[in-house]
Length: 554
Image (cartoon, rainbow, N blue to C red; front, side, top):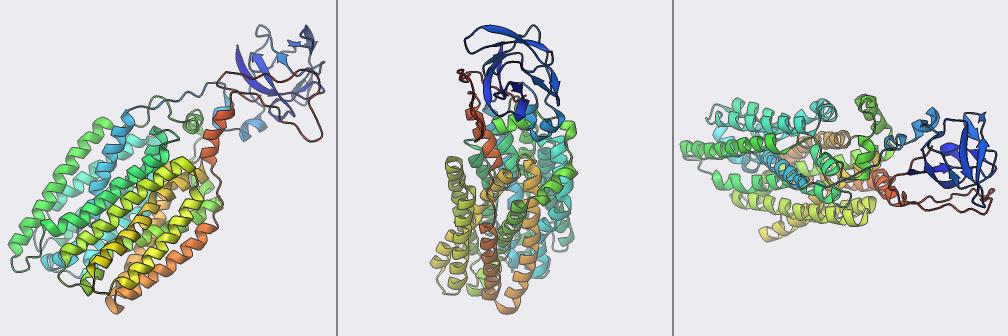
């Protein structure tokens, strides 16, 4: 026998999920026959007759503790109008079994590493803008577009990419991301030559398409492979890989490609070393992706995933999911605020070389180190915020605090940039990076929480799309302001937008839907009476607790 929760009217009506009281039932789960056995308050068995009334069974006795006879009963589905209101996993009677697998760490590691290489390829030009300007004989705007193309490609391609993730799964999306990343790296190897800027731009376009299949995966990997107590940390770690790639992109290019303006052949040789090294690493990671990354584990890692996995896949509509997300007002506010913060980070990262070199000429190497400091500090911020969210689940409060501190960090960085002291810039960049970069995984996880049960890939994809749109706008406007009026005006422009983001974040209503589903499973082992103010439980029989792991409303 298996235990379920049913609702019983004190007057004797079995009301299914609409009932006024809950009671423990043993036996077959649902009633379809007209004769069954139940127990009276004194424990004696009585056979009662039922009759149909508005689609429900009527009891001839007001007993609360009902024992159904499995020999005379068959299964019945919930009424259609009740079924629509239930979560997918509540529409059947299977146990929601969960399990964690060690493979999850390998999946996370491989993804983080090829995401790292893709981020490295994004920033490797911008951090030594003046060197590539000299080598290819192009303007600074042309070099900026090697970064901006990542953002431009993302916006139109995010919708087919998230559709692919939802329809074909994690593995196919990961293979495309890692494969295109390796292909773009090899094309760059053919772009070493002063007249081959168009080849390196073509290669960067391929890499920008690859990142469309990368940026939306952290929350999907975390949700599908990791348990509820580690999901935020896992998401932060996945985002960390991308941030580490940016950090290495700030550090290595100035070291591998020093400014040898008087020797173009040596400059080209150094550039080729950087390109070939990147191609070799990205190819190795593509091979690891083939062997390591799978769509999902055999059993789900959490109750929330178990509920989703029991829903009928054929009912999923990508178009409807997009519509639902755009009807979600808290998510719309998060889209804009996330876009502002992440777009600001993209703009600062792209223009960092120009900002530093304006006040500190000849400091290309220290510019890279400042960028490294900004991102490494952000990596620590990401991990600490992920751990904090796993422990507290205070998504909105954490998001708001980090946003405010990012604003303060941006203001301090803006007004200390021209002091003539590089140590101050290292410190302020570290503070800015800790909070600004640390915000990225928080936004991902907050988005998943307030949009559950919609696809994590779709919500993350839209967040990234808005980030790219704001990144394009901010980079182009701040770049022009920096060229015409200096770094101060461009940074003040960003400060004003981040201040607006604080206001929008404060307006977000925090409804942690995924966390609610995971927490509800804790209370599933006991049938608890839920009384209306006007009606109390009649009779001497009290609901009995159940040790069975799964209970279903009928």
